[in-house]
Image 1 (cartoon, rainbow, N blue to C red):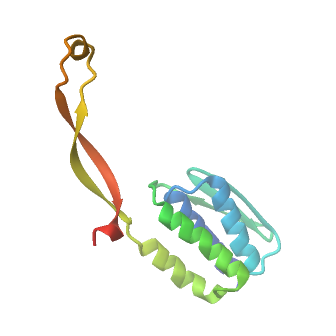
Image 2 (cartoon, rainbow, N blue to C red):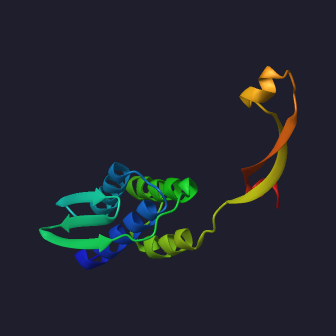
Length: 148
């Protein structure tokens, strides 16, 4: 695998993880694992919440990350890919397809609105000894598998 291909894979994985809420240190570590598993000896990276700086074999590339979301399932899967590559469970040649599958995964949660009764704690209500009930709209996230 060429250094250019390793750049493409590492930056794609780093971008996917960072845009889905991964910590910057986790993105750095994951890209380093992948690059080393692909045979690159010199790996340096610096990740901020909006950008990735990656150096392989003395060459540097930068990737700007514009979108931000939270999908820790994708973060976990990306991290797992790097570890599976290290242990030989998956081959380097499989990475591009696996990364595209990861990118296509949809958000595994969906919102459910419920009305939940709560006891009003307004000072006037407490002084008057009333226990009037109000309703609060609550947004809950349930794992999509439970509902499909």
